[in-house]
Amino acid sequence: MTLEIRGVHKWFGAQHVLRGVDVTVEAGEFVSLIGHSGCGKSTLLNVVGGLVRPDAGQALLDGEPVTGPGPDRAMVFQSYSLLPRLSIEANVREAVRSARRDRPKSWGDEMTERYLTAVGLWEHKEKKPHQVSGGMAQRAAVARAFAVGPRILLLDEPFGALDALTRARLQGQLVELWGSESDTETVLMVTHGIDEAVLLADRVVVMANPPFESVRTVLDVPIDRPRDRATIGKHKAFESVQAELMAILAEDGLAAA
Image (cartoon, rainbow, N blue to C red; front, side):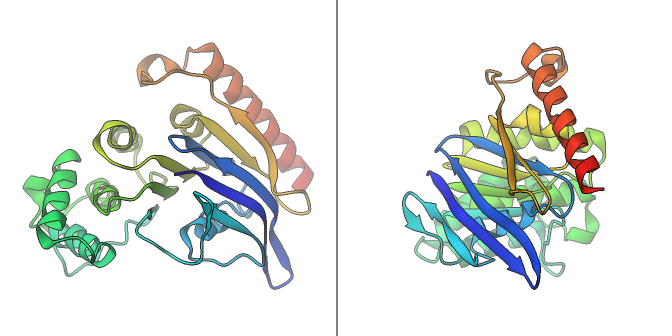
């Protein structure tokens, strides 16, 4: 599924948060959004998710305007947002049934088991969110998103609150699920992490704070997949894109100061 963001503007009161955003994410791409706090990354993600309506411009999915949330998109937030009274299994199953009312119950049950198994949580399916670690809860949130069967996955700093080892594990599981285990074609992710953006993405969209145009630049990450976390840091392209991102963000930070 191709995502087109055309001339999107968004104001919150007098604050012009999104200023003429033009971005295209092709089917099969993983694109990261990066920039300083307040640059509108999450707002743009919410526009694509149908949770925020732009004041001008539009987001299109395969040429059709986004007018609200839909089962073709699933979101994972930094806060895993599981329902506390339900088990891990019930959280995933109820999300699938709610989003996919056109599918039989057996399909929802199959998808629930498939993705909880894929993230290593099926044996913990009866536990409630407070009975598992934050990393396990976020794995459940990732499983829930994929189980809905979206064509586009929207990620809002999903690993920001996790320790380094848990974050690395979840990053790997996410890429594996996207690449081979699901019908999801396209991923758009908000991150503050330069290394994470370069490790995961095919392209990195650098966003700027007001009064500059929202999209500062777009950088390609010319590194073949699959990517080996242990050696990618020594890849010339990784070092080059990382250095360019650091320079751009440092410059924007000084300009905004």
